[in-house]
Image (cartoon, rainbow, N blue to C red; front, side, top):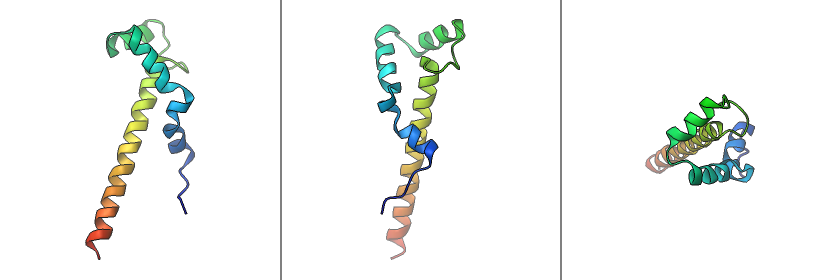
Length: 85
């Protein structure tokens, strides 16, 4: 039986379906650097606005950090279960 993820973790894993990553792909066609993206959102005072590129970047980063932590935990528990046999 698969474990149920907490809602926050589930939300991070659904980033692409929500359009967050797609939005950033489209932004990458317009802006040449991440600094340009950040500068635009700061100038427009939209850094914390829902759907802003900066907020999407933060959400993707959090999602990747979560996935890394889950894999690290999985690998360490897998390693422990193999070595204790």
